[in-house]
View 1 (cartoon, rainbow, N blue to C red):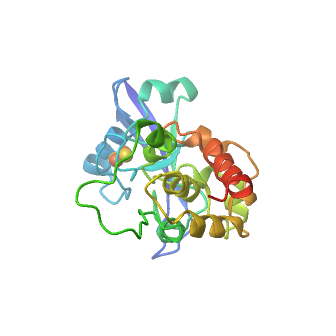
View 2 (tube, protein in one colour):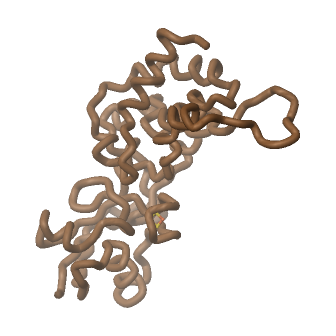
Amino acid sequence: MPLPFKLKRFNAETNAPPYWSDHTVEVEPTDRVLDALNYIKWNLDPSLAYRRSCAHGICGSDAMVINGRNRLACKFLMKEALQESAVITVEPLRGFPVLKDLIVDMEGFFAQYRAIKPYLVNRDPEPATERPQSVEQHARFEFTTQCILCAACTTACPTFWADKEYLGPAAMVQAHRFIFDSRDQGGAERLALLADSGGVFTCRSIFNCVEACPRGIDITRAIYQVRQKMLFDKK
Ligand code: FES
């Protein structure tokens, strides 16, 4: 079936006003929005810019605003899009500077990610084999290991839009992943950072992040657990 698309276009190099480009693409109900973007780029308008890599919801590179909501273009099907609208709109993520069309500048996002030390901190002598962990210990943070750093959560958050000092939900999720890892010894440093302005108490529990996460991570639960750890369990 032929399906109309409206794509938000902008080029930071020319700084001309943003505009919408219109395209009609022949699609199947089981095609993904990414398939349509690929068709447009490869057949109709090679100047269209967007990120994608794995095409299977793993790399997190093609998060964008589709029909007004943050989604991965490689996971969102035409039949789902059509239930919402007869015209599919695609825009870049909100709250980051747009570089070109659907590509945003994620430097700030990754700077916030790096700030929470997203790696195992362990000052003990290196063991001869692995650092063992029980199933129960792993279960404490398993859900936050699901994050693919697509930024759908952070850019859905009104608090982040209004306060660029706020570390944002993705950084909180990554902090949770290491704070609750029984093998890690960097929790106190991360908790000190997250206690500052821009940390976990800046979250207003709006839940946009939970709705936006393409991995189904209960982000508000992760933030709540970090708060609890900070307030009641200094270990
Ligand atoms: S292209 Fe990798 S998550 Fe969509």
